[in-house]
Length: 89
Image (cartoon, rainbow, N blue to C red; front, top):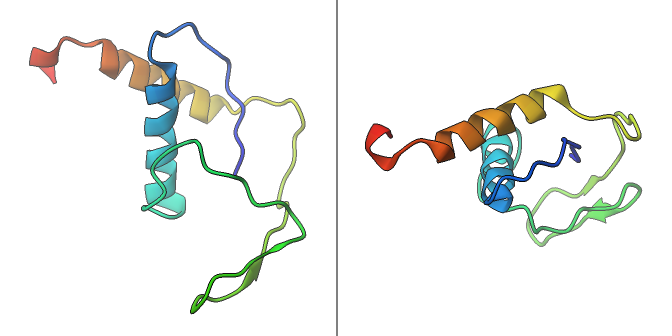
């Protein structure tokens, strides 16, 4: 899954992106994949791993240049959470 969101000037934007990625992977994908710097699998190729079911990567939906409003809103929330004083967490 590749999501496009508006870029912000938040001082720790990598942490925001990593938290969103972790939440999405926990809910929809691999909960062990917790960071954003992972390579994407290219459509048309299989994901072959020993002792795992082989599957083919495919594009299910494409909107070139479009931003994801749901992911963008969650990133706003994460920024707000990270900006709160430590005592209120």
